[in-house]
Image 1 (cartoon, helix red, strand yellow):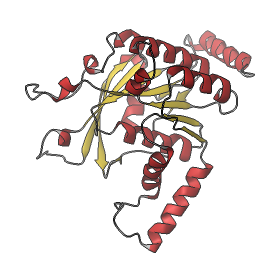
Image 2 (cartoon, one colour):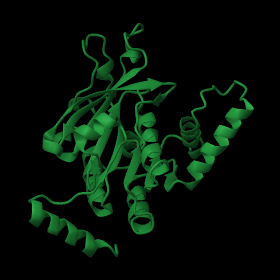
Image 3 (cartoon, helix red, strand yellow):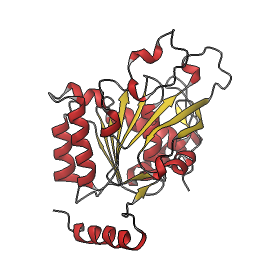
Length: 280
């Protein structure tokens, strides 16, 4: 039982009486343009972040962790169904330390110190990283409702990614999304769900490879199941000679809040990380 439930409902009702709208806590993404369009991620929202492989979905999730859990000390729960805790933390440490070397390069003493300091900051961050490799929807629901709701009280839950959840479940993707929407409301926080896109996005005869709602793999009724849909698109993935090699587009394709505003935000994408984030 959530001991803060009565207070939370009282605040929501009081604000609605005063301004005519229900109060919803917002969690900033720390991508400036995205926060301007969405007003942050709102509690109870289900957000899909879609992209083709190697487009930057996990990198986007890692930037969310840095901004929310590391820089602002707000609790985040991250379910990584594909990568191990070591793999995820290695990427987070590289982003946090800003050490830009490959695994076969020798590291300088000063860079070692940067890595250690970054690891210390990550150790202190209120991040729960669950890398159970066969995490079904039931596993995620049980962990959130029984272990994390009252103890961690997360400001954001990240699940990487939908199609692996589908693999470990007999439920349809639509049923999984319905369950996650219920979970977001029960947890009083937004849930970010990463998702693969259909291969049709890559077809040569397709003039524009920017994804649309119908490209989300295995989900037909996306309009009614999800509050926000973001797509990550990098022209360099398709074009061997892109005009802007180190740029990515984050496309807000669906938004049920903030006057239904949509749009595209261009950010720097270099060394496998997004660089136009504002953590202050």
